[in-house]
Image (cartoon, rainbow, N blue to C red; front, top):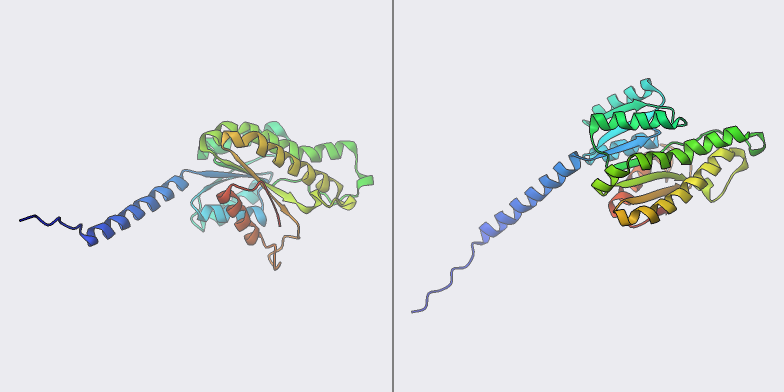
Length: 246
């Protein structure tokens, strides 16, 4: 008499699938906990919302700006949400100072997976009142030092198959002579994003920018810091679009 083939135990299969899902979830969570996003030009508003979003997703947060008091306050705010963060002070117009701050963050948090550059020469000054020196300094803050930070972190970003996320602005496409340096800076930053995307894509480094075409305000129906932080998260997760105009 032929032996009947024993059927697999359905309960064991289901239990095995659940355990596999739990293991995959834990592995993904542990992987995220090893990742760090560095935000240059840290402050209240958009950059804090980005820090909160990525922190809630398991990232450690590195922060660079000029004010130690402000950074300490932000660190405490993030700690209240159980988000790990460290900071270093630097004037982002000063390249060596900024590079030293990046190295300080790396010594505390380790390898960097995402560079988020949020700094801009935020001066509401009409074009014809500007000076060559001020515009040159503004370009350094808004564009050139985003490039300098990229070069400093290039080895980390290659190793981690990381990302560069740049905070763009609508004045890149619609320049306003009443905010000349901001407009030029955002135009330059958008151009930098498009070039870096071409150059770094073969290295598995994603470069993306959100061209923010509205006033950022907690009261906005369309452009709250939280909404925009979600856009940055989605941009980084998808990694398939160099620019979002929003």
